[in-house]
Image (cartoon, rainbow, N blue to C red):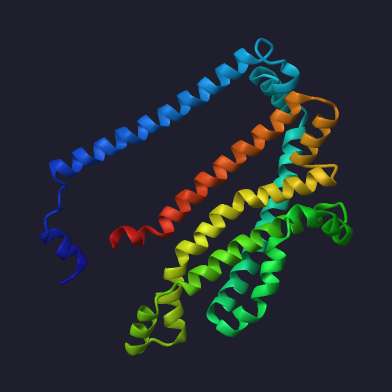
Length: 278
Protein backbone atom coordinates (compact mmCIF):
# COMPACT_ATOMS: atom_id res chain seq x y z
CA UNK A 1 0.00 0.00 0.00
CA UNK A 2 1.37 3.41 -0.96
CA UNK A 3 1.94 6.22 1.52
CA UNK A 4 -0.75 8.37 -0.13
CA UNK A 5 -3.35 5.59 0.14
CA UNK A 6 -2.40 5.05 3.77
CA UNK A 7 -2.81 8.78 4.46
CA UNK A 8 -6.30 8.78 2.93
CA UNK A 9 -7.45 5.73 4.88
CA UNK A 10 -6.11 6.75 8.29
CA UNK A 11 -7.92 9.68 9.92
CA UNK A 12 -5.83 12.60 11.14
CA UNK A 13 -5.17 12.48 14.86
CA UNK A 14 -6.47 15.60 16.52
CA UNK A 15 -4.96 16.79 19.80
CA UNK A 16 -7.27 16.50 22.78
CA UNK A 17 -8.71 19.50 24.61
CA UNK A 18 -6.44 18.79 27.58
CA UNK A 19 -3.33 18.84 25.38
CA UNK A 20 -4.41 22.12 23.76
CA UNK A 21 -5.05 23.63 27.17
CA UNK A 22 -1.57 22.64 28.36
CA UNK A 23 0.01 24.11 25.22
CA UNK A 24 -1.86 27.40 25.66
CA UNK A 25 -0.79 27.57 29.31
CA UNK A 26 2.85 27.00 28.33
CA UNK A 27 2.61 29.67 25.62
CA UNK A 28 1.14 32.17 28.11
CA UNK A 29 3.93 31.33 30.54
CA UNK A 30 6.61 31.92 27.89
CA UNK A 31 5.11 35.27 26.93
CA UNK A 32 4.80 36.22 30.59
CA UNK A 33 8.49 35.48 31.13
CA UNK A 34 9.47 37.54 28.08
CA UNK A 35 7.36 40.49 29.18
CA UNK A 36 8.84 40.22 32.67
CA UNK A 37 12.36 40.24 31.23
CA UNK A 38 11.59 43.39 29.23
CA UNK A 39 10.10 45.11 32.26
CA UNK A 40 13.13 44.25 34.39
CA UNK A 41 15.41 45.69 31.71
CA UNK A 42 13.37 48.89 31.51
CA UNK A 43 13.42 49.17 35.31
CA UNK A 44 17.22 48.82 35.38
CA UNK A 45 17.57 51.53 32.72
CA UNK A 46 15.17 53.80 34.59
CA UNK A 47 17.01 53.40 37.90
CA UNK A 48 20.34 53.94 36.15
CA UNK A 49 19.12 57.12 34.46
CA UNK A 50 17.62 58.45 37.69
CA UNK A 51 20.73 57.71 39.76
CA UNK A 52 23.11 59.27 37.23
CA UNK A 53 24.00 62.76 38.39
CA UNK A 54 21.61 62.59 41.34
CA UNK A 55 22.75 59.75 43.56
CA UNK A 56 26.06 58.95 41.84
CA UNK A 57 28.35 61.21 39.87
CA UNK A 58 27.76 60.54 36.15
CA UNK A 59 31.55 60.48 35.69
CA UNK A 60 31.51 57.01 37.27
CA UNK A 61 28.35 55.46 35.78
CA UNK A 62 27.46 57.75 32.83
CA UNK A 63 23.77 57.34 31.85
CA UNK A 64 21.68 55.32 29.39
CA UNK A 65 21.04 58.42 27.28
CA UNK A 66 24.75 59.26 27.07
CA UNK A 67 25.55 55.66 26.16
CA UNK A 68 22.86 55.67 23.46
CA UNK A 69 24.26 58.92 22.04
CA UNK A 70 27.76 57.42 21.96
CA UNK A 71 26.49 54.31 20.17
CA UNK A 72 24.65 56.50 17.66
CA UNK A 73 27.81 58.51 16.95
CA UNK A 74 29.85 55.33 16.50
CA UNK A 75 27.18 53.91 14.20
CA UNK A 76 26.96 57.04 12.04
CA UNK A 77 30.69 57.42 11.47
CA UNK A 78 31.28 53.68 10.90
CA UNK A 79 33.43 53.16 13.98
CA UNK A 80 31.12 50.57 15.51
CA UNK A 81 30.72 48.51 12.32
CA UNK A 82 34.46 48.31 11.69
CA UNK A 83 35.31 47.49 15.31
CA UNK A 84 32.53 44.91 15.59
CA UNK A 85 33.57 43.18 12.35
CA UNK A 86 37.19 42.96 13.54
CA UNK A 87 36.24 41.51 16.92
CA UNK A 88 33.80 39.02 15.42
CA UNK A 89 36.40 37.89 12.90
CA UNK A 90 38.88 37.15 15.68
CA UNK A 91 36.20 35.45 17.76
CA UNK A 92 34.86 33.24 14.95
CA UNK A 93 38.30 32.15 13.76
CA UNK A 94 39.43 31.45 17.32
CA UNK A 95 36.24 29.54 18.05
CA UNK A 96 36.58 27.36 14.94
CA UNK A 97 40.25 26.56 15.53
CA UNK A 98 39.83 25.96 19.26
CA UNK A 99 36.64 23.90 19.01
CA UNK A 100 37.83 21.66 16.16
CA UNK A 101 41.21 20.96 17.78
CA UNK A 102 39.61 20.55 21.21
CA UNK A 103 37.06 18.07 19.88
CA UNK A 104 39.61 15.98 17.98
CA UNK A 105 42.13 15.77 20.81
CA UNK A 106 39.44 15.30 23.45
CA UNK A 107 37.86 12.48 21.44
CA UNK A 108 41.17 10.72 20.81
CA UNK A 109 42.30 10.92 24.43
CA UNK A 110 38.85 9.94 25.63
CA UNK A 111 39.01 6.74 23.59
CA UNK A 112 42.54 5.84 24.76
CA UNK A 113 43.22 5.20 28.43
CA UNK A 114 46.98 5.02 27.88
CA UNK A 115 47.20 8.34 26.00
CA UNK A 116 44.94 10.04 28.56
CA UNK A 117 47.20 8.95 31.43
CA UNK A 118 50.37 9.97 29.57
CA UNK A 119 49.24 13.51 28.73
CA UNK A 120 47.08 14.18 31.79
CA UNK A 121 49.72 16.06 33.92
CA UNK A 122 50.78 18.27 31.02
CA UNK A 123 47.25 19.18 29.99
CA UNK A 124 46.39 19.92 33.60
CA UNK A 125 49.46 22.14 33.99
CA UNK A 126 48.63 24.20 30.89
CA UNK A 127 44.95 24.39 31.82
CA UNK A 128 45.78 25.76 35.27
CA UNK A 129 47.75 28.67 33.78
CA UNK A 130 45.75 31.93 33.71
CA UNK A 131 45.12 32.46 30.01
CA UNK A 132 45.55 36.21 30.28
CA UNK A 133 49.10 35.59 31.52
CA UNK A 134 49.84 33.97 28.16
CA UNK A 135 48.70 37.05 26.21
CA UNK A 136 52.15 38.74 26.17
CA UNK A 137 53.69 35.52 24.93
CA UNK A 138 51.09 35.18 22.18
CA UNK A 139 51.75 38.76 21.11
CA UNK A 140 55.48 37.99 20.93
CA UNK A 141 54.76 34.94 18.78
CA UNK A 142 52.00 36.27 16.52
CA UNK A 143 52.44 40.04 16.67
CA UNK A 144 49.90 42.73 17.49
CA UNK A 145 47.65 41.96 14.54
CA UNK A 146 44.59 39.73 14.23
CA UNK A 147 46.58 36.52 14.70
CA UNK A 148 47.30 37.08 18.40
CA UNK A 149 43.60 37.71 19.12
CA UNK A 150 42.64 34.55 17.25
CA UNK A 151 45.27 32.60 19.20
CA UNK A 152 43.96 33.91 22.54
CA UNK A 153 40.36 33.01 21.69
CA UNK A 154 41.38 29.60 20.32
CA UNK A 155 43.40 28.77 23.43
CA UNK A 156 40.48 29.48 25.73
CA UNK A 157 37.96 27.62 23.57
CA UNK A 158 40.26 24.63 23.14
CA UNK A 159 40.27 23.66 26.80
CA UNK A 160 36.53 24.13 27.26
CA UNK A 161 35.67 21.95 24.28
CA UNK A 162 38.46 19.48 25.00
CA UNK A 163 37.41 18.85 28.61
CA UNK A 164 33.72 18.45 27.74
CA UNK A 165 34.46 16.15 24.80
CA UNK A 166 36.85 14.07 26.89
CA UNK A 167 34.29 13.74 29.69
CA UNK A 168 31.49 12.95 27.24
CA UNK A 169 33.42 10.17 25.51
CA UNK A 170 34.52 8.69 28.83
CA UNK A 171 30.93 8.86 30.11
CA UNK A 172 29.59 6.51 27.41
CA UNK A 173 28.09 3.46 29.10
CA UNK A 174 30.13 0.29 28.62
CA UNK A 175 26.85 -1.66 28.64
CA UNK A 176 25.64 0.18 25.54
CA UNK A 177 28.97 -0.32 23.78
CA UNK A 178 29.01 -4.06 24.54
CA UNK A 179 25.37 -4.43 23.51
CA UNK A 180 26.10 -2.76 20.15
CA UNK A 181 29.10 -5.05 19.61
CA UNK A 182 27.02 -8.13 20.40
CA UNK A 183 24.51 -7.02 17.76
CA UNK A 184 27.33 -6.89 15.21
CA UNK A 185 28.10 -3.17 15.09
CA UNK A 186 31.40 -2.31 13.46
CA UNK A 187 33.69 0.54 14.52
CA UNK A 188 31.95 3.23 12.46
CA UNK A 189 28.46 2.11 13.56
CA UNK A 190 29.63 2.12 17.16
CA UNK A 191 30.79 5.72 16.78
CA UNK A 192 27.69 6.85 14.90
CA UNK A 193 24.95 5.21 16.95
CA UNK A 194 26.44 4.96 20.45
CA UNK A 195 29.45 7.17 21.16
CA UNK A 196 28.58 10.32 19.21
CA UNK A 197 24.93 10.55 20.44
CA UNK A 198 25.98 9.87 24.02
CA UNK A 199 28.74 12.48 23.96
CA UNK A 200 26.71 15.03 21.96
CA UNK A 201 25.20 16.69 25.03
CA UNK A 202 28.65 17.16 26.57
CA UNK A 203 30.15 18.49 23.35
CA UNK A 204 27.31 20.94 22.72
CA UNK A 205 27.55 22.17 26.29
CA UNK A 206 31.24 22.84 25.77
CA UNK A 207 30.55 24.67 22.51
CA UNK A 208 27.77 26.74 24.09
CA UNK A 209 29.95 27.76 27.02
CA UNK A 210 32.98 28.46 24.83
CA UNK A 211 31.28 31.00 22.52
CA UNK A 212 31.18 33.85 25.07
CA UNK A 213 34.68 32.90 26.21
CA UNK A 214 35.89 33.15 22.61
CA UNK A 215 34.50 36.68 22.59
CA UNK A 216 36.24 37.38 25.90
CA UNK A 217 39.54 36.07 24.56
CA UNK A 218 39.35 38.27 21.47
CA UNK A 219 38.47 41.37 23.51
CA UNK A 220 41.22 40.71 26.07
CA UNK A 221 43.73 40.50 23.24
CA UNK A 222 42.45 43.80 21.86
CA UNK A 223 42.65 45.46 25.26
CA UNK A 224 46.28 44.44 25.69
CA UNK A 225 47.56 45.34 22.24
CA UNK A 226 45.48 46.45 19.28
CA UNK A 227 44.35 49.45 17.29
CA UNK A 228 41.04 47.97 16.20
CA UNK A 229 38.05 46.15 17.66
CA UNK A 230 35.55 46.60 20.47
CA UNK A 231 38.25 45.98 23.07
CA UNK A 232 40.32 48.78 21.55
CA UNK A 233 37.33 51.15 21.72
CA UNK A 234 36.82 50.30 25.40
CA UNK A 235 40.52 50.78 26.17
CA UNK A 236 40.65 54.04 24.25
CA UNK A 237 37.55 55.36 26.01
CA UNK A 238 39.01 54.37 29.37
CA UNK A 239 42.24 56.22 28.60
CA UNK A 240 40.24 59.34 27.75
CA UNK A 241 38.04 58.98 30.89
CA UNK A 242 35.04 58.59 28.56
CA UNK A 243 32.70 56.57 30.77
CA UNK A 244 29.92 56.58 28.19
CA UNK A 245 32.30 55.07 25.65
CA UNK A 246 33.31 52.31 28.05
CA UNK A 247 29.69 51.45 28.79
CA UNK A 248 28.82 51.62 25.08
CA UNK A 249 31.47 49.00 24.31
CA UNK A 250 30.26 46.84 27.18
CA UNK A 251 26.67 47.08 25.96
CA UNK A 252 27.72 45.92 22.50
CA UNK A 253 29.55 42.93 23.98
CA UNK A 254 26.64 42.06 26.28
CA UNK A 255 24.06 42.18 23.48
CA UNK A 256 26.33 40.14 21.21
CA UNK A 257 26.75 37.51 23.91
CA UNK A 258 23.00 37.33 24.50
CA UNK A 259 22.24 36.88 20.80
CA UNK A 260 24.89 34.20 20.35
CA UNK A 261 23.74 32.36 23.48
CA UNK A 262 20.11 32.38 22.30
CA UNK A 263 21.12 31.02 18.89
CA UNK A 264 23.17 28.25 20.51
CA UNK A 265 20.30 27.29 22.81
CA UNK A 266 18.00 26.97 19.79
CA UNK A 267 20.62 24.87 17.99
CA UNK A 268 21.12 22.65 21.03
CA UNK A 269 17.35 22.10 21.36
CA UNK A 270 17.14 21.13 17.69
CA UNK A 271 20.11 18.76 17.69
CA UNK A 272 19.16 17.09 20.97
CA UNK A 273 15.43 16.88 20.25
CA UNK A 274 15.73 13.08 20.37
CA UNK A 275 16.07 13.31 24.15
CA UNK A 276 12.45 14.47 24.40
CA UNK A 277 11.37 11.15 22.91
CA UNK A 278 13.01 9.08 25.63
